[in-house]
Length: 350
Image (cartoon, rainbow, N blue to C red):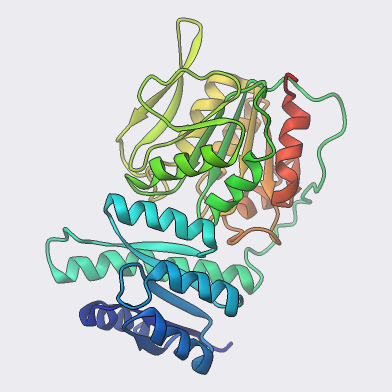
């Protein structure tokens, strides 16, 4: 199998060197070139034809966002991973980049204790994301012997009290596609875990809120779940559903990482299964890893139902693939059909 060819783009000499060294140390990855700005990067993309570009956001002459737009229009077959700072501006621009078509992002450890710690921080993010992205292109998860349903189960739909959604790599665009179909009079609350750091999720909620009829906001401690609204777990905090005074609320939790994630889909799904039992509808969208799998088991054991995104429309068929291949999903659907499926199961007021 030929190596994944990568172009490293960053205006900082040290950053170009560190990223290039991290990538070059890995089997199956080949750094074919570097560039200090977007203008030079575009020339090198045309000449070198890389599979993937790591793209810094802040650069002279042609910045990361302008460069991303030109890559998407002129070289649509080239994937892009943004390299972002953990700042409010970095978070906002990175979320915008994901909506523009960047495959994923990594964050620089601007407050790392040492250069080695900063390097490890980048390596731990970048290598798994590249491998997950290209594993999906090369066939992804091996199918199990358990037959996977491809359409919704027959029979009268059960009443749905909550819709819980989990997503990771490729999730922002998948969430936008799903939520844009949900009308204002939707009859259930929606709770979402999207793997993102602190600061990023507030901007994601803001962008999604502007694109759909539902009210979408970042969850806060004590948020009251009401029909027709959606809440996104804040970065670096788990969210759980708790019942108090006959009403459902969200609580935040800075407990240990679960599946190397905080927020974790498993944490949310497990709490939803306990509070809503058989009236739970869970949706697992594109993402690397298997966060959400154990939570889906809990939901199915409680009598709830699961819908997952199919492989052909997932950026990475990790999270949904694991659920599907364990026979836990009632429906495996293209992203464009999931919103309509949710409405069919839940309903709305006109």
